[in-house]
Length: 445
Image (cartoon, rainbow, N blue to C red; front, side):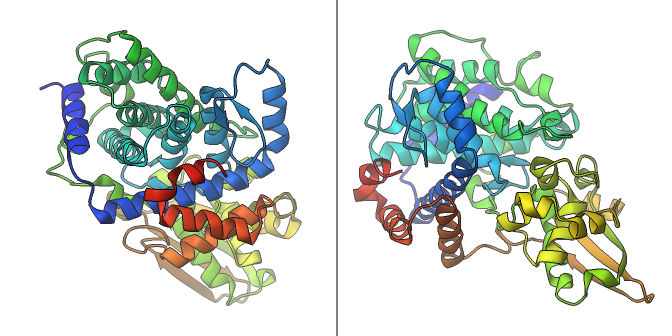
C-alpha cells in the first residue's frame, strides 16, 4: 500500500468511528485556545489586515475575519486568521512533529463552516482529521524536515488542513485523494522566515490554511494527482526529508495523535519554553544586577536559529532563547507582556540577553523529541551560581495546562483584543455546549 493510500485509509477509518468523549473535549479545548490567540493576534495586526483587505476589491463576504468586523473570501479569511493565530507564538503544537496545528486547521475549517453550513458533527470529524494528519505527517518526517529548512506548520499543516476541509464536506474517496494531491503540490513554508527582522513566520500558517481550501476546491472539481503524491520518488516524503518513519501512518502506533499536543503558556517559540520556565523560577531568587552570565544548556535543535542576542524587533525576540530568558528573569513572565514593544525595547532586558549563552548538551539532544530539556545556570557576580532544569515545560501532556488555566488564557487573550469579560464567558459557554451552540459560536466570532 502506498503512503498516500495509508493516509486515505486512516482518514476513512477515523470518519467511520464514533469519536470518544475525551477526544471531543480535547478538540473543544483546542478550539477555545485557537480563538483566544487569534483574537489577540488580530488585534495587534488590525492595521495590516485592514490594509490587505483594502488592496483588493471585495469579491465576496464568505467568511469572517476573526476579531475584526470584516469578511472576505473563504481563502482570504483562512489566510488572515491563520496569520493572526500564529502571531503571538501561543498556538498549540506537537513536539514530535515540531509543528503547529490549530492555526492552519481551524483557520481553514472555520472559513468554510458557515459558507457550506457544516454541521457540528462534520466539523468535529474535520478537526480530528486535520490534527491527526498534521501531527502524524510532521512526526514522520522530523527532524530531517526542520534540518532542511522547512517549516512543518506551512507544509504538513497545509495537507492536514486540506484533509480536514474535505472530510467536513463529506468528500468521496476520489475527491479526498485529489485534495491531498493538490495540497501536497501547494504545501510550502520555509524556516528562513524566522530570521532577522522577518515578520513572515505567521504567513506560513496562514498560507497553509488558504491553500488547504483551494486544494479542497480543486479536489472536488476532479483534478486527479499522481498515484502516490505523498510517498512517490519525487513526492512529499522524498523531497522534504532525508528519512521518514511511515509507522506514524499506522494507528497501531498511536490511536489518537491529538492527545500528544501541547498548549502554550509562553509567547515564544516552543524551543524556548523549557528555558523560559526555568528562568521565571530563578528570576524570583535574584536581582538582574547581580548576574554575571547565564548559560542555557539544551538540545541541539533549540540552538540554531534560537541563540541570537541581537534582537531586531518582536518577531526576532519570540525566536530568541537569550531574549526570552532575560525577559522572564526581569519581568517574571513569559506571556504577551514579555513580547510587547516596550519589553523588546527595554535596555535592561536587552543587556541581560547579551549575557546569555545557549549551549548544546549532546545527551539532551539524544532525548529529542521524547524530552526537550533545558537547564538554566545563572552565574552571579559574587561567584555563586543557581540553576534549574525543566524537562517538560507547562502545556505538554506530561505537564498539562488545566481547564481553568486554559479559560484564564483565553480571557487574557480575548480581553487583550478589546473583548469584554461577558463576551469571554459567552464563548466559553458556547464551546462547552458546542453540540447545540455551534452556529451561535460561528456568528459571534
